[in-house]
Image (cartoon, rainbow, N blue to C red; front, side, top):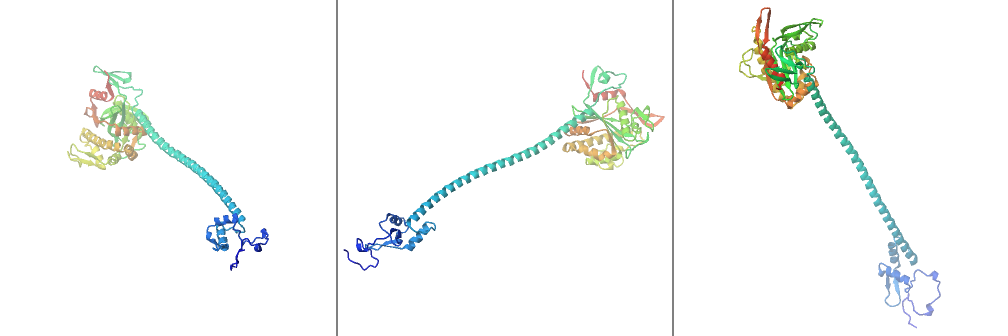
Length: 466
């Protein structure tokens, strides 16, 4: 038998006196069976082995139960400890929960990732739809402006074609040539001095008239509508792009139609060509009667348009091109021979209109002033039109109140665009003739020389083919 010790809490091994039968179910939690695998497992699994210490004298162990309990509660996320089996189960359940949660989280993450992909695809689709819509809008805008540009260009070409066609209309040509000229097909073919000439139907024609009224009259009485002091037949070859201007003396003797106050035809009389304008209403019928007189004068060659201005329009047109520079060939009024001047305002009218009525042939001098003015005006309007195609329209609109014209929009567009891009020269041609004093007519009479005049017309309107 071992000897008794002084330790109050001793445990005696193999002592029958200390062994009393105990109900295992009523075992006190304060006693630990050190040989139990369960408890060893617990001890080994404990985070701090210092919670249970050996007494060192071979009699047993001392446990710090408060520390152990606290450690278990922390280790098991706050679960209370009653006995190890419960904790083990709890640990196992917790582990299962964790696994399940982890699996659930993984599933959730996978779902979330899938959802993100779907959202990304939806967003891509939406962005594509938006971009597709934007592309359609942009394309629509581009097509709209393209249509406008193409439409504008097409309209321009159509107007040009129409204007050219109207200005070169020579259908039903039926000329009234001198008896000593051999011709056929109404004048399409002329035989002259051993050569054959064919009418050039590429010649555009219109008549410019300067009327001696301050303002064009409206509903004028016959014979009082005014006179065409300036007459210039503009001819433009649409193939060579050259303009040739036939200067017609206002005093030229030719056949004109006369009408009574009711507008009824009276007769055709040979008199000054400028008087044809007087037999009309002061505007349209006057201008048309003047145009008819000029057509007769040039053997019935069609004049396809006219443009008549009164005296007030001269300074408007002049100042619209910034003034016109001239160099007078003689001294008159405020102008000095050989001294250059740029005409502004009323100066332009004085320069082109002044005539000394005491001199029968002073209109020839005045024609030279007008020719110089027209050449210089053209030298301004051509570059102005090249820089701005609206220049002719601007001039036309500014002077509209003081003009009467049969030039329409297509004609103006055609002439403007050709002046801007194709114009190839400008020539002014006089009619050869002489003034004759007639006792019974105090007015000056100018008679053209027939053969030179016919040859001038042949040169302007015909092409030698053989």
